[in-house]
Length: 340
Ligand code: Q9C
Ligand code: ZN
Image 1 (cartoon, rainbow, N blue to C red):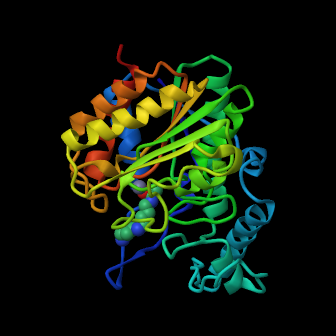
Image 2: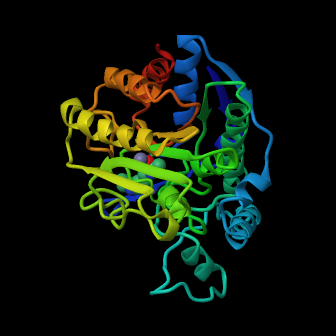
Image 3: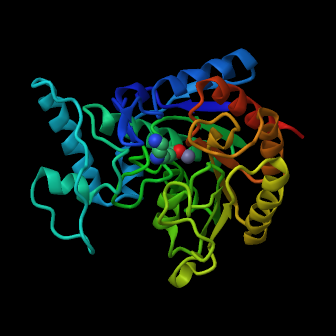
C-alpha cells in the first residue's frame, strides 16, 4: 500500500496538556509518527512518499481568516521564541456568538475551542504538511491509480472545524481529502477514532453529497463533550447525511461490532463513489485516554469490514496515544484493508 507522509510533522510538538488540574506531557507527540512508520517498515509491503505543501487544498475547507490567523500566530511564536516564549495558548473563549476579535488573546480564543491546541512556531507548517498529504492521497485515489492510500500524519485533523482548531487538530485532513474527492462523486467519511469527529461533521453538516458517519465514545462522558450525539443528523440539504453512533464506555469487540455494522450499512446505503476513513487507534484497550477495550487483532477485523464496502479509500491517521500499541494497530488495520 502507498503511504503519504507528512515530513513536516515534527515541527509541531506541544510542550504539555492539562490533565486533572496539572500539566502533563502532551499525548499527541512526534513519537507517534515514528512508532507507526517503524511498524509499517518492519511489516513490509508499504511504499512511502512525501507530499508537497499545498495551500489551496486547505482553503477549500477552512475560512481564509482562520488560515491567516494560524499562519500569523505561528510566525509570531517563531519571533517570540527569541524571548523564550515558545507556545501560545488559548485561555479565554468568546461568550455566545463569536464577536470581533481585537488583539492576540481574543484571536487565540476566537479561533480555538479548547486548551489542548496551542500554537507553536512550526504549527502552521506541520498542519499544512498533513493536509497536503491527505490531498495527495485523494489525488491518487481520484485518478484510480490506487485503490487505498494511507496518510501517515500528525497533528491529527478530525476535530478541526471550518474556522476553529481544537482537540490537537488544526487543519482537517480527512475533510481536505473528502472535499477533493467530492468533485468527482459522492463521498462518505467514516470516522472510527474514539472521539467524535466534530470538525468533519461541522464542515459538511449542510452538504447532501458528503455523508459523515462517526462511531465514538458517548460525548456525555468523553471529549469533545458538546457534540457527537445521535440526534445530530445534518441540516438543510444535508439533513440525513450525518450520523453519530455514540458508544457506552469500556466497550469490547462484542459491543463494537454491531455499531460498526450499523455505520457501514449507512455508508453502503448512501452509495458513495469514494470513502475517506478517519482512523484513530485510540479505541485500543491500552490507550491512555480512550476508555474502550479493543485488542490489537480487532483492528484487522475492522480493516477487513471497511474493505468489504469495496470503495476506493483514503485512510487518514487521527488519534492513538499508546506508542506501544499504535504501530501494531495500524499494521493490523491496513493489512485488514488489503485482505481479500
Ligand atoms: N488529558 C484526537 O484523538 N482531551 N484528539 C484529552 C486527556 C483532548 C483527542 C484529555 C482529546 C483530543 C485526535
Ligand atoms: Zn481521538
